[in-house]
Amino acid sequence: MHGLDRKVAIVTGGGGAIGRAICQRFAEEGSAVGVFDINEEAANETAALIETAGGTASVQVVDITDYDAVAA
Image (cartoon, rainbow, N blue to C red; front, side, top):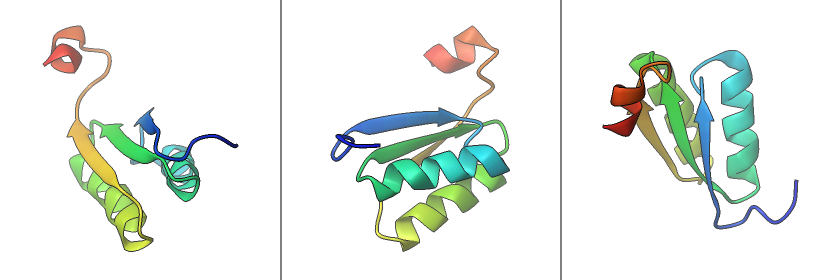
């Protein structure tokens, strides 16, 4: 992955095992990562791992199958 420095990546399911790995990879490439997950605790853990490694992450607790929740 190249050209992702200073980009923003939104990863749905970012608190799960695969989502977490994807979030971390984007962060390693210099992207700010939006960790979207219905599980707040897992999403916060992912964000903490990214921030501990020097990256930038924000958590959004949302069920992406609910359009109104995503829009809000």
